[in-house]
Image 1 (cartoon, rainbow, N blue to C red):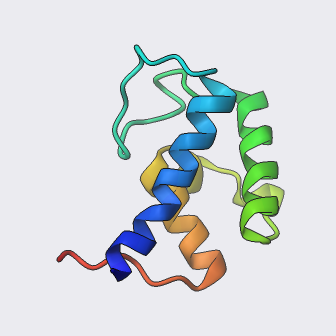
Image 2: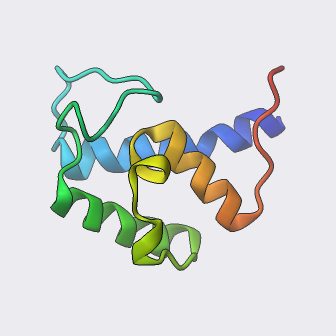
Image 3: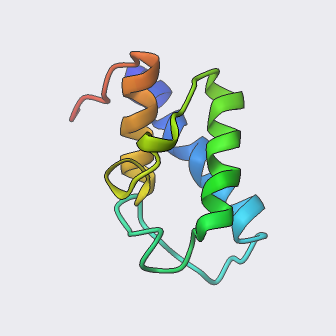
Amino acid sequence: MEKQANQEIESTIRSFIDSNLLFGNDELNYSDDSSLLSEGIVDSLGAVDLVAFLQKRYKIKIGQQEVRPDNFDSVAKIAAFVRRKTNTPTPSAE
């Protein structure tokens, strides 16, 4: 149950990207570890939209210095960043 709840973060991020940055483009497949930047899934304007969404959805403050590839280059990295900011446990490997 805890793992399912924790996977909600990845699911929420993917849903936002699919609906707002890819506009429902079902032909583009990417994994949680795919580079959103190098694959052209998120550009600079998309990053701004994504940051605004995360701040509102998770009620967190994201500083400009935190918007860097080690935090925002993949769904997995974004989810880990959100978990750190919200003190949410990392999903177990069960």
